[in-house]
Length: 245
Image (cartoon, rainbow, N blue to C red; front, side, top):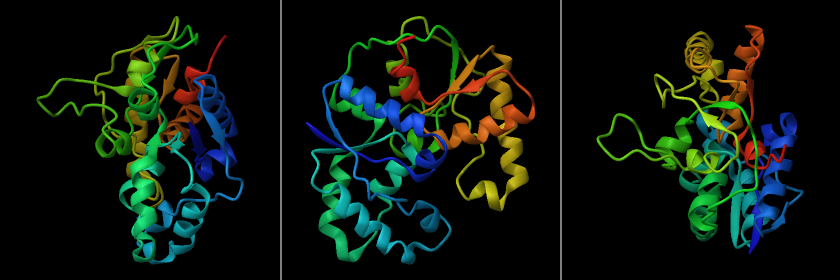
């Protein structure tokens, strides 16, 4: 199984340890992983800001880099959803269809494709799980609490395989953290207040770490935790699933 590893630009620049953990985890699970070195931003920030017509170069580069792999895996629900559902380019309709059918966010790839049933991982800490909006509502990684439907969470299924890890209960399990990509720039005050509410829910229930499948959400909450001089830390789910300590 040849897997193309798609690493979001902000992960590459600010959180390379997340990319490394994703690579190591996939290799431990038997995948042959390839990292196309010419990959850049997927174009989501431009598209979300109303400049989708300027993303043609990003689209073409993504197709050139990733069309030939069996699967494409990304440790970000947000970037995965953009490529999967919001990549519109009349010149690349064939490539878009091919990529749509084989791109996966990391946790859905582990549960739906590899069908992982056990992990050799240890993380003896109390962990709060943040369900990012794109992953939950776009990729259906977890059930929305407002629905009268059986609950599920693909990230939590995997986290429950980690030795010593305790998932804490939250008052508002799937509330938005307020990051929202360009929203945190356009509506900074609202974004910050939403982030504080989300962080405080985790802190109030005894979390030592906050994890998620989107480092962008964690980056937003990490800034709030640092400003409040909190001892609570953030850690991407790939780092926890890859942890052997």
